[in-house]
Image (cartoon, rainbow, N blue to C red; front, top):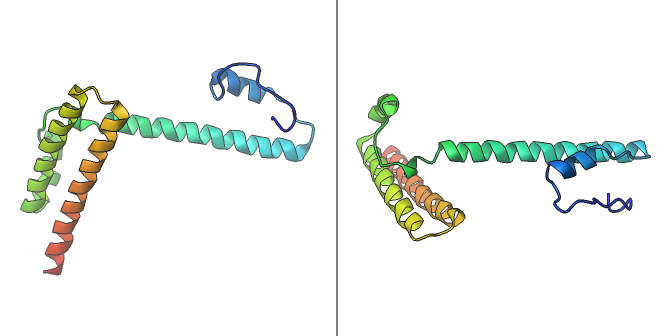
Length: 137
């Protein structure tokens, strides 16, 4: 749009008003319209993807709650090797404790989420090492 000399008159870009303004733009050449529509479609897909990931993140924040074993997950947990179950329980307790500790100090949510993700990745690595190690033995 800027190359065509069209400037958005509003203050905040990529919000609903900006998207409406973009949708109302009429481009002279067919090729410009095609490229523009592709870019708008990509922006729309990206915003949908972000919303899906944010919703999954809101649903996956089990570490906000005290550690416990969900009744509906018990059959899956029961078939896991004992050592994996021990690591999983240790993960639940540690991550919950870590979340509460970081959250109580007033850390930004992004910092807390990054620290929790790091903790989870370390436990996933430990479980993977346990499972792969037992297969080699």
